[in-house]
Length: 307
Image (cartoon, rainbow, N blue to C red; front, side, top):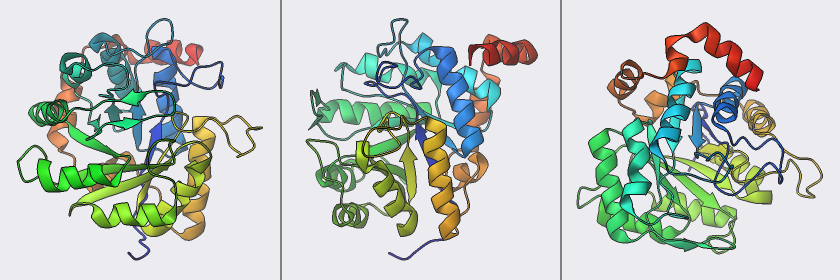
């Protein structure tokens, strides 16, 4: 691997399924907060936002209507921003709930091709569900955002799912390191994962908790891209004295990238780098019926108040 001057794609994982405002007051949980946060992240330098929907009580939800409101609201304010939604198996096991957001036509959707342990619970991803989700993404024209926590997940995609037609190039993968129960955050492990990726994979690295900045910095200098945000890390410092915000975490990445000479990718540039189908965004825009799209001026005012 050689250092690359390619534009850097910043993927902002802004909410997740676990953090609550009690853990960090900057965690967005309502629909309006998530929409406003996506706009702030775009202004800070993100070209992708990875979103999880929350219910009225702030806990995670799979409901299509909530995802629809979030996705259409983000597109009304940041039309070019790449939106990824979650199909996580952390709380729901059945295909219908996990695939519900695909009807909302995000640009990307997460796909974790294997089961694993988180610190306090398991994320169960049976082979049949993984392949069903991959097939449904293909049918909806949604690009999988592959989430690799272990090297075996990469082997499964490369040696099983691709040869059998469940997935096809180009690929976008997040390599997530440092979560207790999965692959540790080290340069050796990151290099090992990158070497195992299938051809035509655009990859990004994420570090969980205190490993976030380390993993991001490694990715920047290795020619990869980054995932950063409050979903993975709530603090600016390892001592946990300085609560983070999504924008501050992104700005830190931008400073490192600028210091080593890597320009930041705009959403339009990121779409080209990832090989996203432009027809997908066109269809998603024209099919939107969200009220924020029908009255842009009033929507902007009400959203500003919500911030």
